[in-house]
Every structure is written in structure tokens, then in C-alpha cells.
Image (cartoon, rainbow, N blue to C red):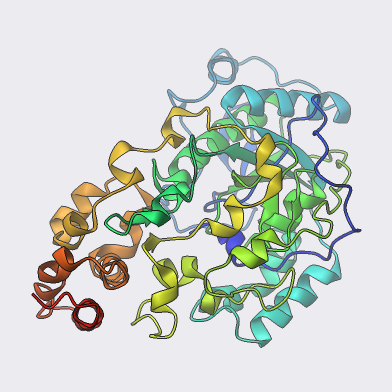
Length: 441
């Protein structure tokens, strides 16, 4: 799931200025992102080759590494520059910023900002408190690489600047409309289309190839969500938005609906001004949480977060939280969807980030019947696939138990003997709930 749900925000800069219209001249905003790629450097001819002196963030042969051969999806001008042996341009900081922003927007990003490769001690302190309080639940990977998450240069010492990028994934309709339909499952908006890791990563690689072709000797790494990067604090530093009281990034232009990606580079680029906090006295996101996962404004207890419970959590879902989850079977958008800043948001313009019809309101009965092969086929290309059939069907059974729909009782009973004990336990809970509702037929 987008790590934006799980990283502590910086403190608000002030009481906020309200939801005045965003400046029309600025492309800004975000909310989430995906994995790491190797540093690459431009050789004398501008061709992209691995930077042997830079630390490698991925295993050899990792698919996230920036390719060293021309990619048909790469910008035509970048490929032509390499193939023709054209000389890279001389580095001019102001011109470079403008050129990178223009190329990123051309490639399909909706928000572009620049920050220094550094974060203040408050990021480390808040992350430390989050981990010390155990609010990360079973996500041990957050603790394992906390130092790199809090310090960009601990991840890559050669980094000088960071290009923070956002891609809009706004829904076309009401993100919470399914919650009133107990016969269907509600999948988070971010997972109703092509896996965002693939979409954002491809564009980041294209931008990376263009950058190393433009400026000889420059090195960079690209990241999308799975590397230890404090994406939201960096996006705030780059002026893309601020971390709201729900700990997610909020944009004055795109509201809550942005995927995030980063380019760490050795180029020295002037930073944008950090975005201030514009939440004011609003607490809609806190009040909207079905499981009370916010112990205080700007603090998230992931152990109570539905996104964590349905995606990251492997075992049985705590019984006291199950009835509160309704029909949310993969992720949760409640705190995002109620934000007043969404009134400026637009639906995603990238076709790959538009919802698949079969994932908008899938029937619980059909989802519960999926075996492993059927699950993999149905969710091919979707981020839902990463949780596996067993964890997903566990979530579906939780929704069935909350449905109060007698017609779903046979569906739950059919899974009482499932080979996975967590699924079987969830089926027994669903059967008990439905029989208690008078659905014992």
C-alpha cells in the first residue's frame, strides 16, 4: 500500500489559511510512491551506464534498475541524443530546473518540485516516536532502515538535490459510494487500476534517461514507494503539499489523490519553498476514520488503520475491529475522501490510472469463490495481487460477516474448511455473524 499512510508528518506550520483557490501557475501536489533504481551516470557521449562508484540499492539484475539500452518508451529526443552522439548541454542551475520540470510534465507527471537532499531532525524524532510506540505494527522493515528513511544522504551519500514528483490518480466519482452497498467490496481508489508502481516507475526511468543524456557526469537514483524514502516530508520540502492531520500529503491543486516518486541527483538544483500547513481547525479526516486510528492530530496508529489491516497485516484481524471495517476489503479512503481540499481535485488524466470497471464495485460472492489461480488472473496488473489469495479472501469474509445479507451465508459456509487456517477462521466468524442476524436458513 502507499507508504504515505504510515510515515509520520512534520508539525503544522500554522493554523492554515483556509481552502482558497490554488495558484493557477503552479503544478503541485501528491500522496504516495514505489521502489528504488540504481544510480546511473552519463558518459562522454551522453549514453547511460551504471555508476560503479555509487552504492547499489537493488539486487543485480533488478527490474527497477534504469536500463542501459534505449527503451522504446523513453523520450524520443533523449534516445536521439544518445544515438547520434550529440553533446550534452552545459549545466545551468536555473535552466536545468525549468527543463526538468517541463520534461516531467511532458512525461505525464502532474506535480514537480525540488528540494535539498536533507531533512530536519524533527523527521527523525517523529519517526522514532512512531516506532518506539509500536504504531508500525508488524512492519519491521520500517524499523530496519529507519536511519535511511530519515536521512536522504544515509540512503545515498552522493545525493545533492531531490526532484519530487506527483501523479494524479483522482477518482471520477464518489470514492465512498460503495460503503452503502453491503453486497459489494470496496477497494481503495489507488488499487482500482494498473499497479501504480509500474506506471510511476516507468515515467521516472524515462525522466532519468533524459536527465543523464542532458548533463554529462550527473548521477541519480529513482524511487517509488518501496525504498526507505520519507516521501511526504520531502514532498512538503519541495512545495508539493503538506502532511495533513491524517498524516497523508494534501495538495492545494490535487487534494488527496497523488502518487509520489523521487529522483535523487548529484545535480545542484535550487529548492522550492516548503508548503505550509493549510488544515486550519478542520478535523474531518480524524472524525471519518471508522476504527479511530488517529490518537491525535498528525499521528497515526497503523495497527488500527484499515489499510494496514487489509494489506500489511498477515494474521487474523482483531475481532474488536472487524465490525468497524464494513465492506472495505482492500485499503480505505475515508480520511482522504472527506478532505475539503478535494474540491480542487480532478479525475486522473493518465488512462492507466483510471478505474477498471470490474474493480469499482466487485460482488463479494464472486470474490470469495476465487481460488489462487483465479485470484491471480482476476487481479493481474493490479496492486491487489501482492497480498495473495488467502489474505484477500480473509478480507472478503470479514465484509460478508458485516453484510447482514442472508444470501451470503452459503458462501461463507463453503470456506469453513479452507486449507488456510486464517481463511477458515474468518469464515467461521462470518457464519456466526450472519446466523446471529437471523440468516440461519
